Amino acid sequence: MDQITFYTGLSPTEFFTILTIMVFVYRTVSAMFVSPEDYNKPPVVSLKTNIRFDDPKPTPEPVQLGQITEPELRPYNGSDPSKPILMAIKGQIYDVSTARNFYGPGSPYAMFTGKECSRALALLSFKPEDINGNLEDLDEPELAVLEDWEYKFMEKYPKVGQLVPEKRIQQNEHKEEIEDNLNLDEGKD
Ligand code: HEM
Image (cartoon, rainbow, N blue to C red; front, side, top):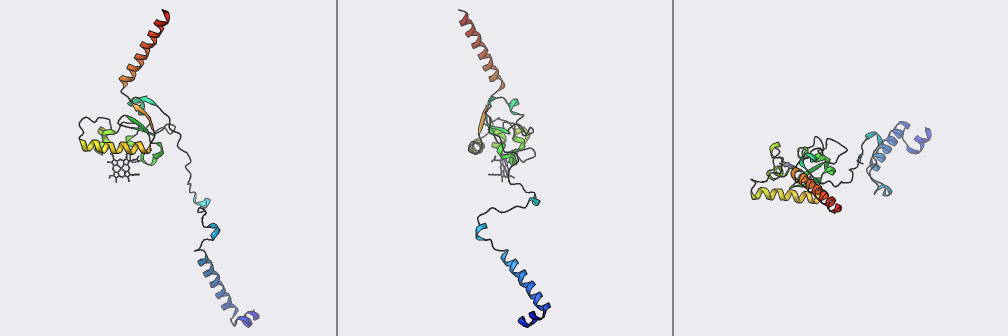
């Protein structure tokens, strides 16, 4: 203690007070700078904060469904997490599973999922009665709005199928049945 006073001319209390202030100032100022080695490293997130940057469930690869009917499209509305989320525009079915923030359950545009929503997009309407593919009474500007949506979806989401009226599928099945029967008959000759 005597040496502190001898060398610094300060009392031990003054010496330790000044030392504490200097350490505090040094640590505060040095905390404002990043060392050159750490400059390009990603920020470290403490485990205590519980933040997850990785998606716990990565979106599965889109599956091609071919031609399906509107009732067959319905279950792809995000309610079953094992199924992709789909919506149709002008008869083309898009897999929008990558945008759960827009289309997942409870999200702002969930009402369009599992449905043909061309009319609603053309009219910029959320009314349930507009969520269908009826374009009959739409005017040119409304059809142009729909076309913009269509381009957006074509660019952003994979196409996974086409909507067909139920009748056409039945007709096709019937046609295949007839062709099978014809082939069988030909085989007999
Ligand atoms: C109050 C009016 C509205 C506001 C402020 C709004 C805002 C937004 C915003 C900020 C986005 C994200 C855009 C992006 O990521 O590029 C978005 C996306 C979208 N909006 Fe709206 N919107 C409105 C009305 C509507 C209406 C009336 C419809 C159709 C009926 C609609 C359909 C959509 C759809 C389908 C998407 C998702 C597009 C995608 O999958 O990328 N929005 N909206």
